[in-house]
Image (cartoon, rainbow, N blue to C red; front, side, top):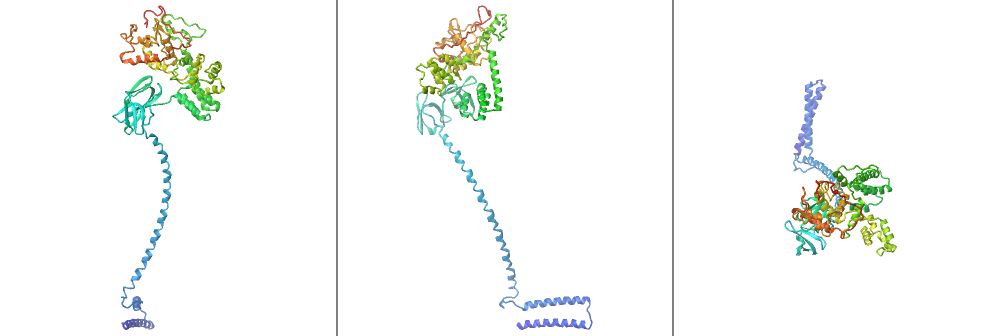
Length: 574
Protein backbone atom coordinates (compact mmCIF):
# COMPACT_ATOMS: atom_id res chain seq x y z
CA UNK A 1 0.00 0.00 0.00
CA UNK A 2 2.77 2.30 0.82
CA UNK A 3 4.24 1.92 -2.60
CA UNK A 4 0.89 2.51 -4.28
CA UNK A 5 0.39 5.85 -2.46
CA UNK A 6 3.82 7.09 -3.41
CA UNK A 7 3.24 6.06 -7.00
CA UNK A 8 -0.01 8.04 -7.28
CA UNK A 9 1.73 11.06 -5.81
CA UNK A 10 4.56 10.83 -8.40
CA UNK A 11 2.12 10.53 -11.28
CA UNK A 12 0.20 13.65 -10.19
CA UNK A 13 3.37 15.67 -9.95
CA UNK A 14 4.51 14.49 -13.33
CA UNK A 15 1.27 15.59 -14.96
CA UNK A 16 1.58 19.05 -13.45
CA UNK A 17 5.13 19.41 -14.73
CA UNK A 18 4.08 18.37 -18.23
CA UNK A 19 1.33 21.00 -18.36
CA UNK A 20 3.63 23.73 -17.08
CA UNK A 21 6.28 22.83 -19.65
CA UNK A 22 3.69 23.01 -22.42
CA UNK A 23 2.68 26.54 -21.34
CA UNK A 24 6.32 27.69 -21.37
CA UNK A 25 6.81 26.31 -24.85
CA UNK A 26 3.79 28.11 -26.12
CA UNK A 27 5.03 31.40 -24.67
CA UNK A 28 8.49 30.81 -26.09
CA UNK A 29 7.22 30.41 -29.63
CA UNK A 30 5.02 33.47 -29.31
CA UNK A 31 1.78 31.69 -29.29
CA UNK A 32 -0.41 33.54 -26.72
CA UNK A 33 -3.63 31.92 -25.73
CA UNK A 34 -6.94 33.76 -26.00
CA UNK A 35 -8.80 35.23 -23.05
CA UNK A 36 -11.15 32.30 -22.84
CA UNK A 37 -8.37 29.81 -22.99
CA UNK A 38 -6.53 31.75 -20.30
CA UNK A 39 -9.51 31.59 -17.95
CA UNK A 40 -9.87 27.94 -18.68
CA UNK A 41 -6.25 27.39 -17.87
CA UNK A 42 -6.58 29.32 -14.62
CA UNK A 43 -9.59 27.31 -13.63
CA UNK A 44 -7.76 24.12 -14.43
CA UNK A 45 -4.79 25.27 -12.42
CA UNK A 46 -7.00 25.96 -9.41
CA UNK A 47 -8.62 22.58 -9.67
CA UNK A 48 -5.28 20.91 -9.93
CA UNK A 49 -3.99 22.85 -6.91
CA UNK A 50 -7.02 21.79 -4.86
CA UNK A 51 -6.55 18.16 -5.86
CA UNK A 52 -2.92 18.28 -4.94
CA UNK A 53 -3.65 19.81 -1.58
CA UNK A 54 -6.21 17.11 -0.80
CA UNK A 55 -3.80 14.44 -1.73
CA UNK A 56 -1.14 15.98 0.42
CA UNK A 57 -3.42 15.96 3.48
CA UNK A 58 -4.52 12.43 2.78
CA UNK A 59 -0.95 11.20 2.29
CA UNK A 60 0.31 12.76 5.60
CA UNK A 61 -1.51 10.61 8.28
CA UNK A 62 -1.96 11.73 12.01
CA UNK A 63 -0.08 10.06 14.88
CA UNK A 64 -2.70 7.35 15.53
CA UNK A 65 -2.87 3.60 15.24
CA UNK A 66 -3.29 2.44 11.70
CA UNK A 67 -6.48 0.51 12.66
CA UNK A 68 -8.50 3.77 13.33
CA UNK A 69 -10.44 4.99 10.30
CA UNK A 70 -8.72 8.11 9.01
CA UNK A 71 -11.94 9.90 8.15
CA UNK A 72 -14.02 9.71 11.50
CA UNK A 73 -11.38 10.05 14.22
CA UNK A 74 -9.99 13.54 13.42
CA UNK A 75 -13.46 15.26 13.49
CA UNK A 76 -14.51 14.35 17.08
CA UNK A 77 -11.83 16.36 18.88
CA UNK A 78 -12.83 19.43 16.88
CA UNK A 79 -16.52 19.41 18.08
CA UNK A 80 -16.02 18.52 21.78
CA UNK A 81 -13.67 21.32 22.92
CA UNK A 82 -16.30 24.15 22.58
CA UNK A 83 -18.48 22.61 25.34
CA UNK A 84 -16.28 23.84 28.23
CA UNK A 85 -16.46 27.29 26.68
CA UNK A 86 -20.30 27.45 27.10
CA UNK A 87 -20.46 26.01 30.64
CA UNK A 88 -18.25 28.54 32.48
CA UNK A 89 -20.76 31.47 32.13
CA UNK A 90 -23.22 29.67 34.44
CA UNK A 91 -21.24 30.50 37.61
CA UNK A 92 -21.31 34.15 36.49
CA UNK A 93 -25.15 34.28 36.88
CA UNK A 94 -25.28 32.49 40.24
CA UNK A 95 -23.15 34.89 42.36
CA UNK A 96 -25.71 37.76 42.29
CA UNK A 97 -28.20 35.61 44.27
CA UNK A 98 -26.40 36.13 47.63
CA UNK A 99 -26.63 39.88 47.02
CA UNK A 100 -30.49 39.76 47.20
CA UNK A 101 -30.70 37.54 50.28
CA UNK A 102 -28.86 39.78 52.85
CA UNK A 103 -31.58 42.56 52.95
CA UNK A 104 -34.10 40.09 54.41
CA UNK A 105 -32.62 40.25 57.97
CA UNK A 106 -32.94 44.06 57.80
CA UNK A 107 -36.79 43.85 57.63
CA UNK A 108 -37.16 41.28 60.41
CA UNK A 109 -35.69 43.28 63.40
CA UNK A 110 -38.49 45.94 63.61
CA UNK A 111 -41.04 43.22 64.46
CA UNK A 112 -40.01 42.99 68.17
CA UNK A 113 -40.66 46.76 68.50
CA UNK A 114 -44.42 46.28 67.90
CA UNK A 115 -44.80 43.33 70.27
CA UNK A 116 -43.81 44.96 73.64
CA UNK A 117 -46.87 47.31 73.93
CA UNK A 118 -49.20 44.31 74.10
CA UNK A 119 -48.45 43.53 77.79
CA UNK A 120 -49.33 47.14 78.67
CA UNK A 121 -52.95 46.66 77.52
CA UNK A 122 -53.42 43.23 79.05
CA UNK A 123 -52.86 43.95 82.81
CA UNK A 124 -55.97 46.16 83.35
CA UNK A 125 -58.22 43.32 82.24
CA UNK A 126 -58.16 41.43 85.60
CA UNK A 127 -59.90 44.39 87.33
CA UNK A 128 -63.17 43.51 85.55
CA UNK A 129 -62.89 39.77 85.87
CA UNK A 130 -65.20 39.56 88.88
CA UNK A 131 -68.63 41.02 88.07
CA UNK A 132 -69.94 39.76 91.40
CA UNK A 133 -67.76 41.86 93.74
CA UNK A 134 -69.82 43.76 96.33
CA UNK A 135 -69.26 44.51 100.00
CA UNK A 136 -71.11 42.61 102.70
CA UNK A 137 -74.25 44.45 103.80
CA UNK A 138 -74.79 46.01 100.37
CA UNK A 139 -78.23 45.93 98.80
CA UNK A 140 -77.89 44.30 95.38
CA UNK A 141 -79.95 43.02 92.48
CA UNK A 142 -78.68 39.66 91.20
CA UNK A 143 -79.14 38.74 87.53
CA UNK A 144 -78.73 34.99 87.06
CA UNK A 145 -79.94 34.74 83.47
CA UNK A 146 -82.69 36.16 81.27
CA UNK A 147 -85.31 34.19 83.18
CA UNK A 148 -84.16 34.52 86.80
CA UNK A 149 -83.22 37.58 88.87
CA UNK A 150 -83.87 38.72 92.43
CA UNK A 151 -82.81 41.31 95.01
CA UNK A 152 -81.50 41.17 98.54
CA UNK A 153 -78.83 42.22 101.00
CA UNK A 154 -75.46 40.47 101.02
CA UNK A 155 -74.99 38.57 104.29
CA UNK A 156 -71.76 36.77 103.45
CA UNK A 157 -69.79 35.58 100.47
CA UNK A 158 -66.85 33.44 99.45
CA UNK A 159 -64.99 33.08 96.20
CA UNK A 160 -67.58 30.52 95.08
CA UNK A 161 -70.86 31.37 96.85
CA UNK A 162 -73.00 34.41 97.62
CA UNK A 163 -75.46 34.45 100.53
CA UNK A 164 -78.33 36.97 100.35
CA UNK A 165 -81.18 37.95 102.60
CA UNK A 166 -84.24 38.68 100.50
CA UNK A 167 -86.73 41.43 101.45
CA UNK A 168 -89.09 38.72 102.73
CA UNK A 169 -86.41 37.61 105.20
CA UNK A 170 -85.59 34.33 103.45
CA UNK A 171 -81.90 33.43 103.12
CA UNK A 172 -80.72 32.45 99.68
CA UNK A 173 -77.39 30.93 98.61
CA UNK A 174 -76.26 30.86 95.01
CA UNK A 175 -73.06 29.84 93.25
CA UNK A 176 -71.19 32.78 91.74
CA UNK A 177 -70.45 30.69 88.66
CA UNK A 178 -74.18 30.79 87.83
CA UNK A 179 -74.49 34.58 88.23
CA UNK A 180 -74.41 36.85 85.20
CA UNK A 181 -73.99 40.10 87.18
CA UNK A 182 -74.49 41.57 90.65
CA UNK A 183 -75.78 45.17 90.47
CA UNK A 184 -75.32 47.24 93.67
CA UNK A 185 -78.29 49.44 94.61
CA UNK A 186 -77.72 53.03 95.68
CA UNK A 187 -78.17 54.04 99.30
CA UNK A 188 -77.18 57.64 98.58
CA UNK A 189 -79.25 60.50 100.04
CA UNK A 190 -82.46 61.36 98.28
CA UNK A 191 -82.15 63.67 95.26
CA UNK A 192 -78.61 62.60 94.51
CA UNK A 193 -77.82 63.22 90.86
CA UNK A 194 -77.66 59.85 89.08
CA UNK A 195 -77.35 58.35 85.61
CA UNK A 196 -79.59 55.35 84.90
CA UNK A 197 -78.57 52.75 82.32
CA UNK A 198 -81.49 50.77 80.91
CA UNK A 199 -81.25 47.30 79.46
CA UNK A 200 -82.14 48.52 75.99
CA UNK A 201 -79.04 50.77 75.99
CA UNK A 202 -80.76 54.07 76.86
CA UNK A 203 -79.27 56.39 79.50
CA UNK A 204 -81.18 58.94 81.57
CA UNK A 205 -79.89 61.54 84.04
CA UNK A 206 -82.11 62.57 86.94
CA UNK A 207 -82.40 62.94 90.69
CA UNK A 208 -82.60 59.77 92.76
CA UNK A 209 -85.79 59.30 94.76
CA UNK A 210 -85.63 55.58 95.58
CA UNK A 211 -83.49 52.72 94.30
CA UNK A 212 -85.55 49.75 95.53
CA UNK A 213 -85.54 46.01 94.95
CA UNK A 214 -88.63 46.08 92.73
CA UNK A 215 -88.69 49.64 91.33
CA UNK A 216 -86.43 52.61 90.63
CA UNK A 217 -87.86 56.11 91.06
CA UNK A 218 -86.03 59.16 89.74
CA UNK A 219 -87.07 62.74 89.19
CA UNK A 220 -86.74 64.03 85.65
CA UNK A 221 -87.64 67.66 85.01
CA UNK A 222 -89.54 67.90 88.30
CA UNK A 223 -91.63 64.78 87.57
CA UNK A 224 -91.27 61.55 89.53
CA UNK A 225 -90.87 58.61 87.16
CA UNK A 226 -90.90 54.99 88.32
CA UNK A 227 -89.37 52.11 86.35
CA UNK A 228 -89.61 48.39 87.00
CA UNK A 229 -86.34 46.82 88.08
CA UNK A 230 -86.38 44.39 85.14
CA UNK A 231 -86.05 47.37 82.79
CA UNK A 232 -83.05 48.88 84.58
CA UNK A 233 -79.48 47.65 84.35
CA UNK A 234 -77.79 49.91 86.90
CA UNK A 235 -77.87 53.36 88.47
CA UNK A 236 -74.65 55.32 89.02
CA UNK A 237 -74.26 58.42 91.19
CA UNK A 238 -72.66 61.31 89.30
CA UNK A 239 -71.37 64.56 90.78
CA UNK A 240 -73.32 67.80 90.59
CA UNK A 241 -71.95 70.93 88.95
CA UNK A 242 -71.08 72.34 92.37
CA UNK A 243 -69.15 69.21 93.29
CA UNK A 244 -67.32 69.26 89.97
CA UNK A 245 -66.46 72.90 90.56
CA UNK A 246 -64.99 72.17 94.00
CA UNK A 247 -62.97 69.26 92.62
CA UNK A 248 -61.61 71.42 89.83
CA UNK A 249 -60.55 74.14 92.26
CA UNK A 250 -58.56 71.59 94.25
CA UNK A 251 -57.00 69.93 91.20
CA UNK A 252 -55.89 73.08 89.34
CA UNK A 253 -52.63 74.64 90.47
CA UNK A 254 -52.42 78.45 90.87
CA UNK A 255 -49.92 78.78 88.00
CA UNK A 256 -52.04 76.80 85.53
CA UNK A 257 -53.59 79.89 83.98
CA UNK A 258 -55.05 78.17 80.92
CA UNK A 259 -56.79 75.57 83.08
CA UNK A 260 -58.12 78.28 85.40
CA UNK A 261 -59.54 80.19 82.45
CA UNK A 262 -61.12 76.98 81.15
CA UNK A 263 -62.82 76.59 84.53
CA UNK A 264 -64.20 80.14 84.22
CA UNK A 265 -65.64 79.34 80.78
CA UNK A 266 -67.20 76.15 82.20
CA UNK A 267 -68.83 78.14 85.02
CA UNK A 268 -70.14 80.70 82.54
CA UNK A 269 -71.65 77.99 80.33
CA UNK A 270 -73.53 76.58 83.33
CA UNK A 271 -74.77 80.05 84.34
CA UNK A 272 -72.81 79.97 87.61
CA UNK A 273 -72.01 83.65 87.16
CA UNK A 274 -71.11 84.49 90.74
CA UNK A 275 -68.53 81.70 90.90
CA UNK A 276 -67.24 82.66 87.45
CA UNK A 277 -66.80 86.29 88.52
CA UNK A 278 -64.82 85.28 91.61
CA UNK A 279 -62.56 82.97 89.59
CA UNK A 280 -61.99 85.59 86.89
CA UNK A 281 -61.00 88.26 89.43
CA UNK A 282 -58.58 85.79 91.03
CA UNK A 283 -57.09 84.91 87.64
CA UNK A 284 -56.63 88.53 86.58
CA UNK A 285 -54.86 89.30 89.84
CA UNK A 286 -52.26 86.67 88.95
CA UNK A 287 -51.84 87.35 85.22
CA UNK A 288 -52.87 89.73 82.44
CA UNK A 289 -55.21 87.45 80.47
CA UNK A 290 -57.00 89.15 77.57
CA UNK A 291 -59.72 86.50 77.11
CA UNK A 292 -60.39 86.54 80.86
CA UNK A 293 -60.99 90.30 80.71
CA UNK A 294 -63.50 89.88 77.89
CA UNK A 295 -65.30 87.08 79.71
CA UNK A 296 -65.43 89.14 82.90
CA UNK A 297 -67.24 91.91 81.02
CA UNK A 298 -69.88 89.44 79.88
CA UNK A 299 -70.24 87.82 83.31
CA UNK A 300 -70.59 91.22 84.98
CA UNK A 301 -73.32 92.15 82.50
CA UNK A 302 -75.19 88.94 83.27
CA UNK A 303 -75.01 89.58 87.01
CA UNK A 304 -76.19 93.15 86.54
CA UNK A 305 -79.12 91.98 84.44
CA UNK A 306 -80.09 89.40 87.07
CA UNK A 307 -79.89 92.06 89.80
CA UNK A 308 -82.12 94.41 87.84
CA UNK A 309 -84.65 91.63 87.32
CA UNK A 310 -84.72 90.87 91.03
CA UNK A 311 -85.05 94.56 91.87
CA UNK A 312 -88.09 94.91 89.64
CA UNK A 313 -89.82 91.94 91.26
CA UNK A 314 -89.08 93.07 94.81
CA UNK A 315 -91.47 95.61 96.30
CA UNK A 316 -90.71 96.97 99.69
CA UNK A 317 -94.33 97.36 100.71
CA UNK A 318 -97.65 96.20 99.34
CA UNK A 319 -99.12 98.68 96.87
CA UNK A 320 -95.75 100.31 96.14
CA UNK A 321 -96.26 99.72 92.42
CA UNK A 322 -92.62 100.49 91.65
CA UNK A 323 -93.25 104.29 91.55
CA UNK A 324 -90.56 106.82 92.25
CA UNK A 325 -90.22 108.12 95.80
CA UNK A 326 -91.43 111.60 94.85
CA UNK A 327 -94.49 110.39 92.97
CA UNK A 328 -97.68 109.46 94.73
CA UNK A 329 -99.05 106.09 93.65
CA UNK A 330 -102.34 106.26 91.79
CA UNK A 331 -105.43 105.53 93.84
CA UNK A 332 -107.18 102.33 92.74
CA UNK A 333 -110.52 103.17 91.20
CA UNK A 334 -112.31 99.95 92.18
CA UNK A 335 -112.10 97.14 94.75
CA UNK A 336 -110.74 94.81 92.07
CA UNK A 337 -107.98 97.28 91.20
CA UNK A 338 -107.19 97.68 94.88
CA UNK A 339 -106.94 93.90 95.25
CA UNK A 340 -104.67 93.71 92.19
CA UNK A 341 -102.31 96.25 93.79
CA UNK A 342 -102.23 94.22 97.00
CA UNK A 343 -101.42 91.06 95.02
CA UNK A 344 -97.96 92.40 94.26
CA UNK A 345 -97.10 92.12 97.94
CA UNK A 346 -93.55 91.54 99.15
CA UNK A 347 -91.31 88.71 98.01
CA UNK A 348 -88.64 87.37 100.32
CA UNK A 349 -85.06 88.35 99.61
CA UNK A 350 -82.24 85.92 98.87
CA UNK A 351 -80.80 86.46 102.37
CA UNK A 352 -84.16 85.59 103.93
CA UNK A 353 -84.36 82.46 101.80
CA UNK A 354 -80.91 81.44 103.02
CA UNK A 355 -81.96 82.08 106.64
CA UNK A 356 -84.98 79.78 106.27
CA UNK A 357 -82.68 77.08 104.92
CA UNK A 358 -80.47 77.40 107.98
CA UNK A 359 -83.42 76.98 110.36
CA UNK A 360 -84.80 73.98 108.43
CA UNK A 361 -81.46 72.18 108.21
CA UNK A 362 -81.42 68.51 109.27
CA UNK A 363 -78.01 67.67 110.73
CA UNK A 364 -78.61 63.95 110.09
CA UNK A 365 -78.82 64.71 106.35
CA UNK A 366 -77.12 68.09 106.08
CA UNK A 367 -77.01 70.10 102.86
CA UNK A 368 -73.82 71.62 101.50
CA UNK A 369 -72.84 74.70 103.48
CA UNK A 370 -70.01 77.23 103.48
CA UNK A 371 -68.67 79.35 106.32
CA UNK A 372 -66.03 82.04 106.38
CA UNK A 373 -63.03 82.08 108.70
CA UNK A 374 -64.24 85.40 110.06
CA UNK A 375 -67.36 83.65 111.41
CA UNK A 376 -65.20 81.20 113.37
CA UNK A 377 -63.20 84.08 114.87
CA UNK A 378 -66.41 85.90 115.80
CA UNK A 379 -67.69 82.80 117.61
CA UNK A 380 -64.46 82.46 119.58
CA UNK A 381 -64.56 86.12 120.55
CA UNK A 382 -68.18 86.26 121.69
CA UNK A 383 -68.42 82.83 123.30
CA UNK A 384 -64.87 82.57 124.62
CA UNK A 385 -66.06 81.55 128.12
CA UNK A 386 -68.52 78.90 126.92
CA UNK A 387 -67.41 75.32 127.67
CA UNK A 388 -68.21 74.30 124.08
CA UNK A 389 -65.61 76.72 122.72
CA UNK A 390 -61.97 75.53 122.86
CA UNK A 391 -59.67 77.63 124.98
CA UNK A 392 -56.19 76.70 123.73
CA UNK A 393 -54.69 78.16 120.58
CA UNK A 394 -53.91 74.72 119.15
CA UNK A 395 -57.51 73.53 119.54
CA UNK A 396 -58.88 76.73 118.05
CA UNK A 397 -56.52 76.47 115.09
CA UNK A 398 -57.92 73.03 114.30
CA UNK A 399 -61.40 74.51 113.78
CA UNK A 400 -60.24 76.41 110.70
CA UNK A 401 -59.57 73.09 108.90
CA UNK A 402 -62.78 71.35 109.93
CA UNK A 403 -65.75 70.74 107.67
CA UNK A 404 -68.17 73.71 107.50
CA UNK A 405 -71.02 71.57 108.85
CA UNK A 406 -69.08 71.13 112.10
CA UNK A 407 -69.05 74.89 112.55
CA UNK A 408 -72.82 74.94 111.96
CA UNK A 409 -73.28 72.26 114.63
CA UNK A 410 -71.34 74.42 117.06
CA UNK A 411 -73.57 77.39 116.21
CA UNK A 412 -76.69 75.33 116.90
CA UNK A 413 -75.25 74.05 120.18
CA UNK A 414 -74.44 77.61 121.27
CA UNK A 415 -77.83 78.86 119.95
CA UNK A 416 -75.89 81.71 118.37
CA UNK A 417 -78.81 82.84 116.19
CA UNK A 418 -77.19 86.19 115.51
CA UNK A 419 -74.64 84.32 113.37
CA UNK A 420 -77.08 82.11 111.44
CA UNK A 421 -77.31 84.57 108.58
CA UNK A 422 -73.55 84.25 108.01
CA UNK A 423 -73.88 80.56 107.08
CA UNK A 424 -74.31 80.08 103.35
CA UNK A 425 -76.46 77.05 102.49
CA UNK A 426 -75.58 75.97 98.95
CA UNK A 427 -78.22 73.24 98.51
CA UNK A 428 -81.75 72.83 99.82
CA UNK A 429 -82.38 70.91 103.05
CA UNK A 430 -84.32 67.69 102.55
CA UNK A 431 -87.67 68.95 103.84
CA UNK A 432 -87.62 72.09 101.71
CA UNK A 433 -86.63 70.06 98.70
CA UNK A 434 -89.64 67.80 99.23
CA UNK A 435 -91.88 70.87 99.48
CA UNK A 436 -90.58 72.13 96.15
CA UNK A 437 -90.85 68.87 94.20
CA UNK A 438 -93.83 67.09 95.75
CA UNK A 439 -96.11 69.92 96.82
CA UNK A 440 -95.41 73.39 95.46
CA UNK A 441 -94.44 72.44 91.90
CA UNK A 442 -96.41 69.18 91.78
CA UNK A 443 -99.95 70.37 92.54
CA UNK A 444 -100.18 73.52 94.67
CA UNK A 445 -99.44 76.01 91.85
CA UNK A 446 -101.41 74.14 89.17
CA UNK A 447 -104.53 73.48 91.26
CA UNK A 448 -104.73 76.16 93.95
CA UNK A 449 -102.88 79.19 92.61
CA UNK A 450 -104.55 79.79 89.26
CA UNK A 451 -105.72 83.28 88.32
CA UNK A 452 -109.36 82.35 88.97
CA UNK A 453 -108.57 80.74 92.31
CA UNK A 454 -106.09 81.63 95.10
CA UNK A 455 -103.63 83.18 92.67
CA UNK A 456 -105.85 85.99 91.36
CA UNK A 457 -107.74 89.03 92.57
CA UNK A 458 -110.57 86.78 93.77
CA UNK A 459 -108.28 84.80 96.07
CA UNK A 460 -110.19 85.75 99.20
CA UNK A 461 -108.45 85.29 102.52
CA UNK A 462 -105.79 82.91 101.18
CA UNK A 463 -103.39 84.06 98.47
CA UNK A 464 -100.40 82.49 96.67
CA UNK A 465 -97.84 84.17 94.43
CA UNK A 466 -97.67 82.77 90.90
CA UNK A 467 -95.41 85.20 89.05
CA UNK A 468 -91.96 83.57 88.60
CA UNK A 469 -93.19 80.69 90.72
CA UNK A 470 -90.06 78.65 89.90
CA UNK A 471 -87.89 81.27 91.62
CA UNK A 472 -86.80 80.09 95.07
CA UNK A 473 -87.74 83.48 96.57
CA UNK A 474 -91.34 83.11 95.33
CA UNK A 475 -91.51 79.51 96.50
CA UNK A 476 -90.25 80.33 100.02
CA UNK A 477 -92.66 83.27 100.15
CA UNK A 478 -95.54 80.90 99.44
CA UNK A 479 -94.26 78.55 102.14
CA UNK A 480 -94.28 81.41 104.62
CA UNK A 481 -97.80 82.32 103.52
CA UNK A 482 -99.00 78.76 104.10
CA UNK A 483 -97.44 78.65 107.56
CA UNK A 484 -98.65 82.06 108.74
CA UNK A 485 -102.17 81.95 107.26
CA UNK A 486 -105.22 80.58 109.02
CA UNK A 487 -108.96 80.48 108.34
CA UNK A 488 -111.46 80.71 111.18
CA UNK A 489 -108.74 79.96 113.71
CA UNK A 490 -107.53 76.81 111.93
CA UNK A 491 -104.00 76.78 110.44
CA UNK A 492 -103.61 75.95 106.81
CA UNK A 493 -100.83 73.52 107.81
CA UNK A 494 -101.02 71.72 111.14
CA UNK A 495 -97.55 70.28 111.64
CA UNK A 496 -98.64 68.43 114.78
CA UNK A 497 -101.60 66.75 113.03
CA UNK A 498 -100.90 67.00 109.29
CA UNK A 499 -104.08 65.14 108.36
CA UNK A 500 -106.16 67.90 110.00
CA UNK A 501 -104.49 70.68 108.03
CA UNK A 502 -106.97 72.81 106.13
CA UNK A 503 -104.78 72.55 103.02
CA UNK A 504 -104.97 68.75 103.23
CA UNK A 505 -108.68 68.52 104.07
CA UNK A 506 -109.80 70.92 101.33
CA UNK A 507 -107.77 69.04 98.72
CA UNK A 508 -109.78 65.85 99.43
CA UNK A 509 -113.06 65.02 97.72
CA UNK A 510 -115.93 66.60 99.60
CA UNK A 511 -117.34 63.18 100.51
CA UNK A 512 -114.07 62.15 102.20
CA UNK A 513 -113.05 65.39 103.94
CA UNK A 514 -113.85 66.26 107.53
CA UNK A 515 -113.56 69.94 106.60
CA UNK A 516 -114.67 70.00 102.96
CA UNK A 517 -113.85 72.74 100.53
CA UNK A 518 -116.66 75.28 100.01
CA UNK A 519 -118.91 74.47 97.07
CA UNK A 520 -117.69 76.92 94.44
CA UNK A 521 -117.83 76.81 90.68
CA UNK A 522 -114.83 75.25 88.97
CA UNK A 523 -113.34 73.60 92.07
CA UNK A 524 -112.04 70.04 91.76
CA UNK A 525 -110.37 67.89 94.42
CA UNK A 526 -106.63 67.26 94.20
CA UNK A 527 -106.31 64.06 96.25
CA UNK A 528 -108.54 61.84 94.12
CA UNK A 529 -108.47 58.03 94.20
CA UNK A 530 -105.93 57.96 91.37
CA UNK A 531 -103.64 60.53 93.02
CA UNK A 532 -103.32 59.19 96.55
CA UNK A 533 -99.54 59.48 96.28
CA UNK A 534 -99.87 63.28 96.38
CA UNK A 535 -101.73 63.06 99.69
CA UNK A 536 -99.09 60.72 101.12
CA UNK A 537 -96.35 63.10 100.01
CA UNK A 538 -98.02 65.99 101.85
CA UNK A 539 -98.32 64.03 105.11
CA UNK A 540 -94.72 62.83 104.84
CA UNK A 541 -93.43 66.35 104.21
CA UNK A 542 -95.35 67.86 107.15
CA UNK A 543 -93.83 65.25 109.48
CA UNK A 544 -90.29 65.83 108.15
CA UNK A 545 -90.35 69.56 108.83
CA UNK A 546 -88.60 70.75 112.00
CA UNK A 547 -90.47 70.06 115.26
CA UNK A 548 -91.14 72.15 117.18
CA UNK A 549 -91.50 74.70 114.45
CA UNK A 550 -88.83 77.43 114.52
CA UNK A 551 -89.76 81.09 114.46
CA UNK A 552 -87.97 82.73 111.56
CA UNK A 553 -86.59 86.18 112.42
CA UNK A 554 -88.30 87.56 109.31
CA UNK A 555 -90.82 90.39 109.38
CA UNK A 556 -93.52 89.40 106.94
CA UNK A 557 -97.24 90.16 106.94
CA UNK A 558 -99.37 88.02 104.59
CA UNK A 559 -101.45 90.14 102.19
CA UNK A 560 -105.20 90.19 102.80
CA UNK A 561 -106.98 90.69 99.52
CA UNK A 562 -110.47 90.79 100.96
CA UNK A 563 -111.64 93.19 103.57
CA UNK A 564 -115.29 93.60 104.43
CA UNK A 565 -117.07 94.35 101.15
CA UNK A 566 -113.84 95.10 99.27
CA UNK A 567 -114.21 92.63 96.47
CA UNK A 568 -117.94 92.21 96.11
CA UNK A 569 -120.32 89.32 96.00
CA UNK A 570 -118.80 87.77 92.91
CA UNK A 571 -115.58 86.66 94.66
CA UNK A 572 -114.86 83.08 95.71
CA UNK A 573 -114.33 82.81 99.48
CA UNK A 574 -111.94 79.86 99.66
